[in-house]
Length: 141
Image (tube, rainbow, N blue to C red; front, side, top):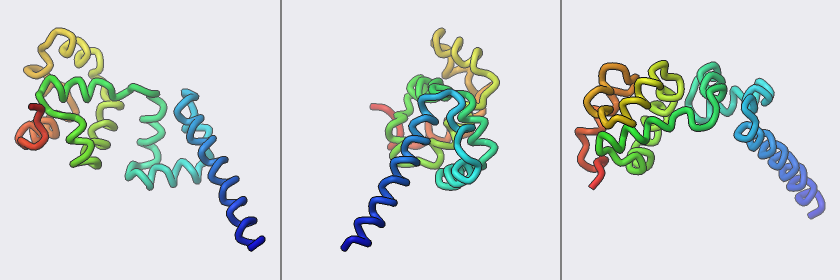
C-alpha cells in the first residue's frame, strides 16, 4: 500500500508541475516558448498541429482567432455547433485565423457589416466557411 501511495504522490507532483507549465502558457505571452522542447512537441502532437505552427500560434497570444467566431455569426454559422460536431476542422480554422495577415481588413468588414459579402476575397478559411454554410445542422436558428 505504501508503494502505491508513493507512486501516486510522484504522479500528482508531476501533474501539478505540468499544470503549472500549461497555466503559464496561457498567462504569460511567451509561455509556450518557456515549455521544454519535448513538452512543446508532445503538446503539438496531442492536438494535431505541427510544433512550429503551434509555436507561431502561441506567439500571437490569446484572442488571436477571435474574428473567426464573429465571422461565423455574420455568416449565420453556429460556432458552438461547429466546435462540437467538427472539432478538428474548428481547430484548423482557428489556427488559420490566428496566423492570418488580413486581420485589419476582417475587423473592418466585421464592424461595417460587410464581412459576409467580402470575406471570400481575403479569408484563409473561406472554403471552410462556405462548406459550413451548406450544412443546415451547423447554421444558427
